Length: 255
Image: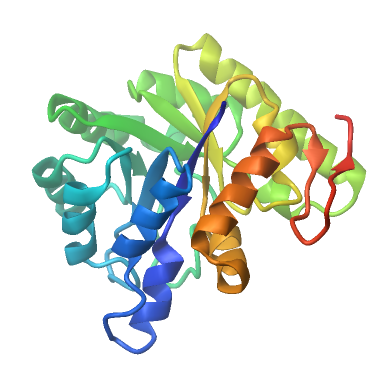
């Protein structure tokens, strides 16, 4: 079955609101693994607004599935990754003023810079994914930069209102996923996915893993993290339907 990489950044966001010790994103990661997550994602930002260096160091030692470190293409982050050696790094764009990552990395416009970063990480034994918009030029550039994976940005799909708009964004994702596979790239997807919209993305044959954070953590406030992860896995498992854990059944939607 398609994998689920749980992003625990928002656990750290709650902790940092009081600059305290709780809740601990490391404990959250271990609970997510127990519930069936195939990996854990964290974004170590330049401003350390949520995940801290201590978190990544502990996660590297304790995570039993896979640690995916999201990071900007900076010398500081490259050095941290090469020391900690997570199983995967995902290179993302980063701006201090943004609330969350806005759009994909412009690989097409910065192929040489991205290629150098990818080469250093891969030489360090780390698989590299590039977080990109579902655009053919970006997918082609990711292949030229010799990435192992692309993670397709699903934000426009998640934010689309109305069936036609959502279907148009889904078509872009399907085409980008197909192009990625044809170019020899592994294909993941994430951003803005929730229990109701995840099914059609999970149904894309080329997509190997989904990265989901906010929706799972928001649900966990009400039902607990292990239950929230299990519900998301159930929604992923019913690919092609729209699922809402607040109701006892899923509304079938053909795509």
